[in-house]
Image 1: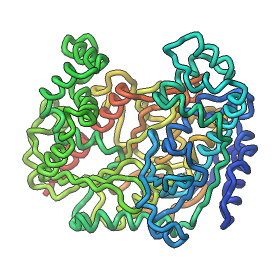
Image 2: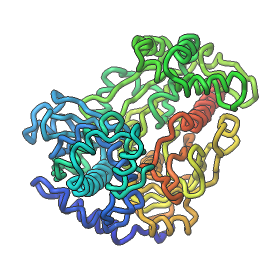
Image 3: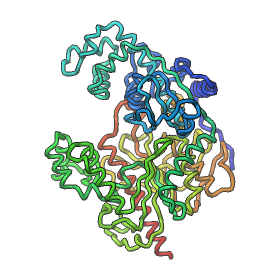
Image 4: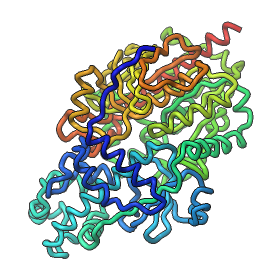
Length: 575
């Protein structure tokens, strides 16, 4: 293969990574304050104002959303790959501690109720994510600590947007805008004043311990994850597989039809509950005032319904409904937090499958007889973080009798799109392997456009799989954009490295242009845009996709499932 000059990281980011891993080689506990200077010096696009005396609210919000709420009590964070890892290092059964979760990052963590939190990690990408996040929070926490020390306690413990003038004055005292303080208040909600008290009264000084960081430890963690699935569903090793990396809701919602079977309950919930935004949206859908999908709307409402008193039993009902249709869920145990779902195509009920899915490309096609004869499975996993994708796909491919298709759906930052768009790359540069992968993406814009209401599909794009979200700055962004790369994410490159090893007799190369055309199985990569880093104020800390994000998520999932059904129909016809 032809050698290439890779897209270079900046010297500041390289220094930051070298510093992190040199410190973590120590068997001793690492002080996060040792990283504050190099963190600030890399000028991260997610932490533009790290060196400034005023708070960077976007970086603060980003960090808070990706760490459990108990972080305000925690002083020591322990990272390990498996349950035995923690036990061997003297932490006993950490799973007997209180399980805690972040709002916007899936990672199994346990809090001892005091100053220690233990978290499972799946690959070095978790380190590249956790360490900058903790560092950013510590920097911003201590800025607020200094500012709040000059403000009377009765102010920060009682201030609220309901009292506009004191709220505006409080923002001025914190050297941020009223809008920024309002965003922070909306994220913290009822805990706002309590959290301000934490910031004021305690100076942050996180300590970090990595129990083990060898490649073999990550492989063992992946083996533990797989063994749990294999033990509960042993036939997984004997059936051909369509592998999907997406999420835990869209694929099963579309194939089971549970939410659509409960439309009357959901409409009653919308009308009776205090849900004015949902009610307005539903009325607009009924009158066709907006072009929203009614099916996607009910999928969205079901999650809210199940978390309400009225729908408290609906989750167990959904699990039973899914099992009747050959949909099996396998939550992660004793390892990293990635749920798997195994779906038996032969057990699906065509009568409850979302009507937008058809087994052939012609409109209105509804010939489903091939399903009952199918021996294929869909193995759907909750998308992993970064390099964990390589370990997971490698393990699944080692054990599956045949891979029929690999479909990857995930979030991305776009340099030329807007939130809610979908990006389809056919070139991926991977920062891990330094390879540029060129491949046939089996999806194009026409496969998604009929189902995408609010966004645009951008196909024939070039993507970069980066080390981590914090590990980007303006210099790197400029180089990426000048080279024609517009799609920034974390999983495609690791997946493509694993894919290379599925049909070549050697480990993936390093720093090469790699041709992945003419694969012996289907391949599709779809990214929905959740971040636009070149738009001022629109980084990942600035907000969430919420309902509009479902538009791009379900358009992508529909394209994947339509492709699988068409391929399986053709496969049945060829027998």
